Image (cartoon, rainbow, N blue to C red; front, side):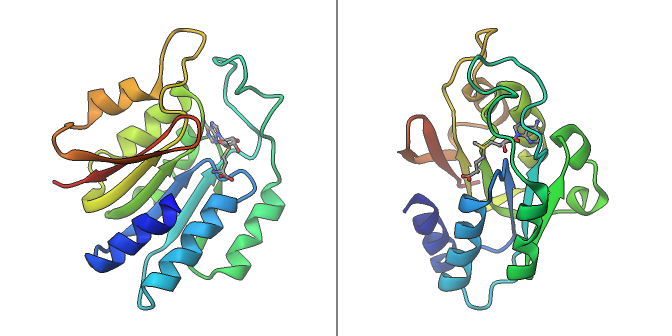
Length: 184
Ligand SMILES: C[S@@+](CC[C@H](N)C(=O)[O-])C[C@H]1O[C@@H](n2cnc3c(N)ncnc32)[C@H](O)[C@@H]1O
């Protein structure tokens, strides 16, 4: 519902730009976002970038979110591109994939979902988004207040990067997910 509501509002306000998900795993939220964008905005030209290592996490900084969990199949996720012509699946740890020339060239983002669980993994995505979110864009972050072994949470990165007055809290989801809207 949260993703659906975000795309409904994006369509009402005619906000344009691309979409990006950090942490695709099997692609369920990624495919859902593509479907609802197409449903509400038949003329949408947005590309959807899905980034994941497909090898789990880069470190063991969290006791639960670690290498044992969340390994998924790149080959399976790559098939999403066949189903949706506007989907791009990019394999690699964010430290590499955010240097991919196609990704680096993204100028305007209307919807971003950070679902990579770790503080350490969210550092580069948040830096990447800082100057790319357009006015009216949505930023969804899961595991916002989870604390890693070193006492760090993704919320710290968010508050140290974005001006709170320009990021309006929209809603929460799941156990510790939040949705903000950038109002410029
Ligand atoms: C919770 S899952 C994503 C779930 C997915 N959004 C969904 O709703 O189906 C987290 C994913 O983040 C990926 N991930 C975590 N840290 C990463 C990093 N630094 N670089 C690339 N992928 C990372 C993991 O491989 C894992 O697939």
